[in-house]
Image (tube, rainbow, N blue to C red; front, side):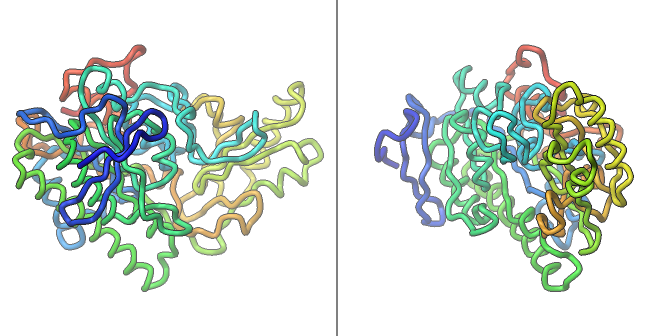
Amino acid sequence: MSPQSQGLSRRTLLQLSAATGAGVVLSAAAGAPLAAAAGSRKRVYVVVVDGCRPDEITTLLTPRLHSLRRGGMSYPNARSLAVMETIPNHVMMMTGVRPDRNGAAANSVFDREEGVVRDLDRPSDLRFPTVLGRLRGSGHTTGTVLSKRYLYGIFGTRATYRWEPFPLIPVSDHAPDVATMDATLAMVDSVDPQLVFVSLGDCDRAGHADQTGTTVQVLRRAALRSADTQVGRLVDHLKQTGRWSRSVMVVLADHSMDWTDPHRLISLQPRFDADPLLAGHVTIAQNGGADLLYWTGRAGRRDEAVARMRTLANRVPGVLAVHDPAKLRLGAEAGDLVAYCRAGWRFSDPAPYSNPIPGTHGHPATRPIPFFITGGSPLVRRRFVSSISTSTLDVAPTVGRVFGLGPPRGGYDGSSRL
């Protein structure tokens, strides 16, 4: 390992070699240690298998994950928060607070200042302190290995060390799980952060395809098997290097998946544009299983318009429910109304052809997620806890518990599961 140059945002670029021999480039915070510290330090690894369903962890399909779940602390009633897509659930894992406090409402939001619908992919989109940054402030080292470009963007420079996803697969804009795990092992070997946050994206990207075809079902299973293999690589490496006995590993998904038939599309924009009051004054941020609805007309007519939007949306086949964002603990970024679709349906806005992706998430049907805690640390016990409905909000308090890090100002919305 050798510093190559002083990088952007006062960070140093490090050229590393993974255990596989692949070249890996990390960026390090200014003043970060440029070598792994020795000693019997506690370590936490948060591993997200993006888009995995609880019923997909089986002895045949994902044997390593299944074994880890059985041997650790399993929470079968774990849930993501229904409106949340990839970014908000990852954000909640590292903050432990709901979107009305952390600023991340959904993957796609309408930016009223810029006047455009955009993805959340900027560090400024995340307003609440993360355990990545809070641990750094208390003298610990942290690292992020996130397979998706926009996840890398929103977490910014909060971790001591971070990997920029590479190579990126065209269209999906994510790095393959093999490359992501290569980077994880290189980070562990070279700088050995005390907290490493890893997100594997292949399962999610394969899950967005049409599951009615045999070939694509095979692709989904292959992605799950690959994720299982990559998690196994990490566990084996931690054991071989003597780290496992001092480690806690939290394994979960940010959401599960639902699939739609081609004709089960919901497009609300044409309905609103056909209404004299709403025409030209409603913008929609489409999030697959959820639509965020924004009134952009005169403020004096907002209440009337929102009531009309709610009435029209509830009449559309496939719409499950329409909610006030505040009642879902969402902030102003979520707009004036949130619409959920029924299982087996998806939103496609502003036009019926806007969302061609059959696999979707973000609605109540995709709330169940796998969530378990494993590792060699004495903190980990073998337990099956069906009485607790845990969620993505519980990751940050759990990490804090390991390191003796107290709650942030205002407290957590989640709880430690150790």
